[in-house]
Each structure stands twice: as C-alpha cells, then as structure tokens.
Length: 523
Figure 1 (cartoon, rainbow, N blue to C red):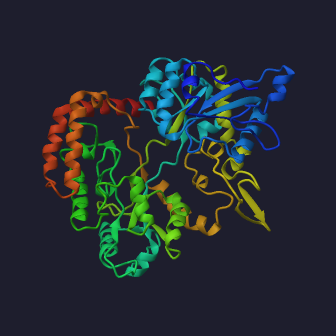
Figure 2: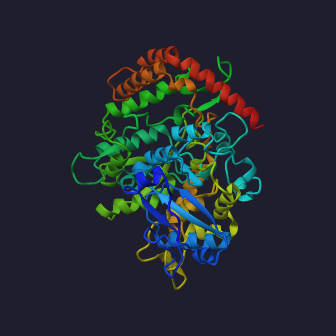
Figure 3: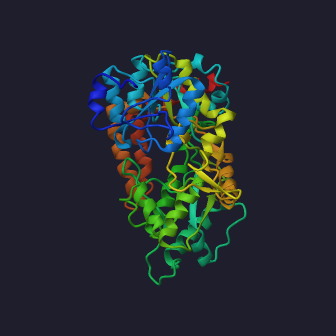
C-alpha cells in the first residue's frame, strides 16, 4: 500500500483535494481508493522502491486511462513509484501555500511563474533547491530548453537555477478571422497570411457595418476584446507600433528601455490612439469593458465578433465551437505587419516557461526526479508522450488514424514536459492532415517572427513599494479611460511623468541593472 502524506497539509486538504495515484493492474492504474502501486510487487518482496511525490496543476484532478498507462510504463522503466497530488485548479495556489507551511513537502512541485510569491519565499527559505548539478546529465532537457528559461530561473541573481522548465513554444501570436465573413465582404486572403494595419482596420469596419453573417441585422462587431486581470482594456495592436518589450536603446538615458516608458518615443501613444479610434467607431465588442478573456472568446464563438487574438495552434478548438452554432463557419489566421518596416515581428509569449518544476529540500533523490522529467523528452518516449496509445487516445481504421471513442484528456502524459520550438506538440496522431497542412505555416511564422524581451519576467523591487503600487491604480484607470475614448491620448504624457516620480525611475534603474547582468552572464 502507498503511504499517504502526513502532517497539517494532508489533514487540511483531505476534504477538498483528490489524491490520485498511478497504479498497476489490468486497467493500467487506480485513482484514489486503495492507493495500490505499479511497483507493489517489489514492495511486497522487500526490495526498496524510490517513491516520488509530485504536486501538479492540471485541468483535471483524476488520471485518465492514458495517463495511468504512461505513468505505469515510466514507473516500470525507471524503477520508481510515483504519487500525484492534483488540487483543483482554482485553489492550487492556496494549496501550495498550505503545503509549504505544513513542513510536509512533496518531492516535486509545480509553480506557475518565477514571480509567484510562494516560490520566491520557498527559495529564500531553502525549501527549493538548485538543480544545476542534476541537469548536467539531462541531455534532452538541456537540448530542448530555451536559454531565456534557464536565465529566468536564476532568481537569486547568481548562477543557481531553481527549477526545471515546463517549456512552451515562444511565439508571436496573431489573430483569428472568420474566413466565411472575409469571403462575404470580398476580402482576398493573402498567401503569406500577412495584412497591413489599414487592411486590419478595413476588415473590422466591414465586419461591423456590412452584415457579414447575412441576417439583415446590425448585430456584429469587428474585434473580440476584454479586460485583463487588472480590469484594464489594453491596446489592440502593440508590436505594430514598435512596442517590443525591453530592448537595447541608442542615445537615451538608459541602455535598456521598454518603449512604453520611453519619454522620447510615441509608440505607446500610437497604440493607445489606435485602440481609442476603434472604440470610438464602434468596431470593438460593445461589451469589451466588462468582458474577460473567457466571455470575449465565447462571444466570438457565438458570431457576435469576427476577429480575435489568439494562438495559431487552436484551430480545432475554435472551429469546433463555432460550428456548434453555424456549420458553415470557418477560420483563417492572419498577422498584422508593423508600420515601421512592413514586416511581421512581435514580442514573444514570456520566456518559454509554461510554469516549472521545483525540487524540494526533502527529496531523497533529486537526480532521479530530473531523470523522470528527462524521460518525457527522450526520443524513445516522445512520440508516445505526444500521441498516446492506440484504442485509448486514437484508433486505426484501415491505416487512417482517428480520435478514439470516449477519449479523455491526458494532462500528466502530455502537459508535464515539452520541447522548445516543437510545434508538433500541437498536433496528435489523430489530427487530420489537412488541418496540419493549414496550421503548420501559421505556427512556423509565429515562432520565426518572435522578438524576445530582455526583462525575462523579472520584477524589480521598486514595483512592490507602496507609492508604485498606488500609482499603478492611477495608471490602469487612465489607460482604460484613454482606450475607451473618455480621455485624450495626450494625457498619457502627464501619466508617464507621474509614473517616473512614483517609483518608475527606480524601476527602470533596477531593470537595467538586471538586464546588464543577465546579458553579461549569457555571453
């Protein structure tokens, strides 16, 4: 029998958390209940099996048949016994805090980002250990991880790395367009999937005013939009006006600067002005100021809006939802070129971290834990990790692979580790070839046109001071008012001056010191 966790955390979580275990048996495993193990025979025979306890954050707390089979094989190949504790997604951060306070730690913990306060505190308290010496033999982890990810995990400003990246593809996301609406307004889709800012505006205008759904009503709008986590409606286009995150400058007061905070640049004002014009002309979803990301997406699916920013790998997801209401609905994916040089380039999505795995100070064998994560990326296992198993994840009908009946998601198998730059992860064995042929060029352009910001998700200490935090509220309120057309764009100059006076100067100085050190270390 597996041992369940003891201590304050286990007692607190027992009523609210599903405890799932990868187990043996004809069904490929057992979740919850009796906690038997894939290595139970070894335990009964008296030989010692290393137990690895993993605290993970996935969309579902129960293990699917595919997950169980994957874990069972991994346990067998590696001679380990793996326990998974998967709290509900909405309460994950609270569960991590309880765990860290309990003194009873798993061996491996998922953290969502390097600025997560639980992680920051755990590193300071010595609860999360550096992994440098353990990754020396992890050839695949080293090969398939972005350098920016390793740098971001050097959170103590030294060479120690405090985690194993769960890699995501760094990309320049663009926009989904209703392809059937484009045909209705007579817009020819460019072969290179690139359009100008003027063409983008023209499409939004016609989607709003030319009845693209043909129902004879003025009930459609150009762009799906919603507020961010701070309840602020951000500019629609950014890189198109020269906003590419923290970059090296020439002739300025600082060596590195985000154009948003550059008093000599009008890039951010252009972005604000453009969005304000869209809002004033009624080309945005009229509910933009109250939508969040989920409601904005749902209104796109319902055919209220015809353009939505998003990831090029989500064709099947969006198309399936659209066709529930309109069988003739279809999508295409287009990039908006920059105004300065007419090329496509955009700031990347983070630093290549889709969260990461921290090893705790009580782990008995950190090397074995790293080897377990390495297992996912090894050539011998990678195809199975991506595609799953016949008759569980897909079926073979006369050589044609299709989705298996009653297929379940397999987040433990598929979302624990990934290879940097590998767009194949967004397809499965059952993905239709026509969808792959259509989506692959979009994904490749997203990857090939990315520009990395040099801040590596670093958060200066200045941002945590009361005056800076208080002024952030003023900043957010003013930006929201500008993009809604309620405040003149020129008000931003005054806003930026106030930002520098309320901690911004210190913020920029600290960011420059960080980037200079990071750039020097990476050379």
